[in-house]
Amino acid sequence: MHGSLWICVGLILLLTSCAAQQSSPPAQYVPVDKLPKRAELPDPFRFEGGSRVKTPQDWPRRREELANLILYYEYGRVPPPPGNVKGTVVSEVQSVFLGATVKTVLLEMGPAGHKITSRVELTIPNGPGAWPVIICGDLCWGRVNGDILADATRRGYVVADFDRTDFAPDSRDRSKGVYAAYPEYDCGAAAAWAWGFARVVDYVYDQPWTDREKIIVTGHSRGGKGSQLAGVLDTRVALTNPNNSGCGGAGCYRLQAPKSEDIAAITKNFPFWFSPGFTSFIGHVDQLPFDQHSVKALIAPRAYLSTEALGDLWANPQGTQQCHLAAREVWDFLGATDRTAIYFREGKHEHTRADWNILMDFADKVLRGKPVETKFNNYAFPTEPKPYTWKKP
Image (tube, rainbow, N blue to C red; front, top):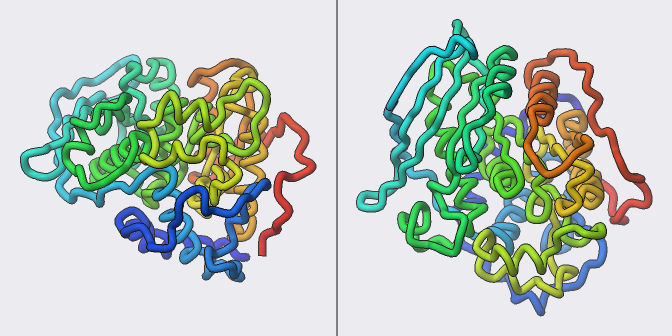
């Protein structure tokens, strides 16, 4: 398929993504014990009625159906955009070390009486022009490292660092943020964090220093789960990069390597990350009507990069690779194979300077058309046999 066709598909997805967030759950959704068992990774091309996607023009309809299914069972439904995001510059300084303008912006949004506020730390390269913007939601763990910011500035990237827990506490507390502002929605924290990413996109999208076609989201661990879902729900995001995101992120529920987090552990320890009923799949993972390859596939044909650490066994790097290969079938089908990748490094569970530069290498390659030396899809585990028997149409 010609490259122009996946661009057309992307435009169609832009029109359908909001409907996937806001629509009511279809009546045909059934309790977990009534769902069929599927030992292998489910076929993302099969409509719930049994027919299959035949052409790329069919994919947006299947995408919307699959997105609703995933939100209903796993993440919960998220509120619509508030349409009133306001940003106030609190401070602005010039950094000689970074060669950049450093701003603190206070965002305000939401319904009257339940305003949500969030601080965004911006590092903007000096000079004219519009830049790609990397949005990271991990400010709750501290500012992005200065060396990373220097790398980003030198390479011509804006970094927008915000605290995802402004939108939902990383706890069972549902008295703040999105929960208080929109109590009628049942989203868990991961979906509320994804909603927060979109509000930062709302702000940067209208800034003169933003290249609107090159908006990137990233996050580490649980922040990676939020950033991945942000890339699903907001088609303005050109490149999605979860880092070491594991179970509930780029990992896999059905394919578990030794010592990796499984659905029982994550939903027992962090049930508030998910929809209220997701714990019902403990012991019934084979009845999950999708897996995380299905979640990643919703991003296609836009760009996606999963960065993983081989020593991070809890994040299931082997299952993550299998999940990546299954999701790649959708990019292949849409003629966008080169826009999805996985990258493995040695090391442990952290978001390193090397991870950030791998992300910028991939962004240079797929968003800016620059030659890079990095070789992606450096598979660390055998790629056969595949954990599924279906094939792309």
